[in-house]
Length: 460
Ligand SMILES: *Cc1c(COP(=O)(O)O)cnc(C)c1O
Image 1 (tube, rainbow, N blue to C red):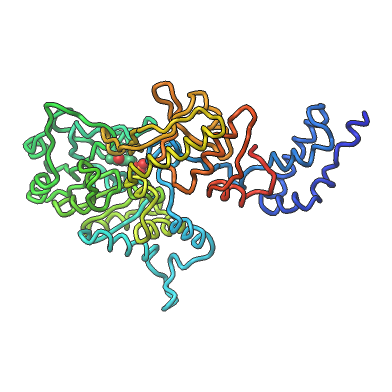
Image 2 (cartoon, rainbow, N blue to C red):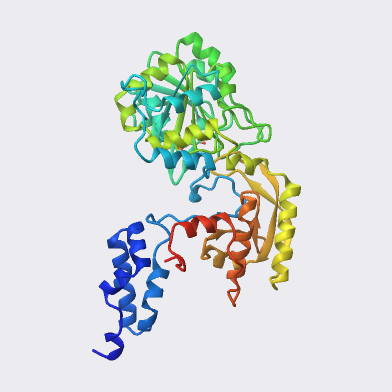
């Protein structure tokens, strides 16, 4: 063994360092040891000098015990599927933290008896949608549709318009999902036009439900017609068939900024028997599927054996309740952000970057809802425009910043970036410079990151 190798700190010595004792408490012994072994090997290979081993171990520790990393969404896409759709509000995060321990999720503390699971979350949803007789929560909107199709139409038929046979993303298609329950699809109308008579002709003794789906991620223009919920519900009532309506985007009440997006309250008022929607789109909450509607139908669904396989955990229920009953969500704030304010933030950031010698300019921009919502709608926004090559470096910054490349420039769209993250964004851009000059990290993401790891560490 060479002297060089002999002076590499031993595993026991490293593990005893107070900073690594702390790291073991946070990440577990095995993870810390694996990092040590890896770094020692680098030193043995001569890639690292022995005196730098401890520093390198600290730097190589992960940001948290889980592999997910907080990132800044500067894409201008409100609900970015690859970034986990809606970020939770501070209230919802706090609720998650509390619910993560032992809670009374299914216990009535007054009587000591078993209570209705998630009753306070269900009560918050009922209060938010008085038009609903009853409410049920499952894992996501796809699960809500599977549950409805299984309980109401398995072995029978689902009547649905050809214009509403959508693919929801990542290759998953609604028709396949529905058919997987054992129901058959009775497709009616044409891709561009479906009339009430098409539904009337198709409903028969085998019909288990009529399904209306909001084509949330595409729009057909031109010679088109579809049947509104109000007219379809009259027909369904006459024939005694439940009308299930998939609103998709999670609006509980009308949103004036998105006049073409349906909402749960309006569809129930128009006579839908059951309305399903996602929790992590425009509602701004955790991933879940919400079902609102007639008590007899909701009871049938929640008593169905499959309901148990689709039920949500206490953490989701807590986040959902805090989202529905709590302060405006980050998604709501992003949707309603004022363009003039975004523009002045962009100008301020661009000026501060130019002071540091970065070629930056404030520009007007357009944001979109994304996540399969409000196709064709864009919201006036503002961005900091940088050299297009900055985008890749920013993705590898700490915390990572996701920008948008448009017209040969890298745009940092501010609509979805909370104002308190501007300093972190600035630090991220400066860190991509050749010199790697860094401002003191002051933004909240940075604080979140720092709070979760030992001082001086870097991402792995
Ligand atoms: C997003 C969406 C779905 C799928 O919802 P998940 O919550 O992702 O399962 C289904 N239908 C419509 C209309 C949607 O917009």
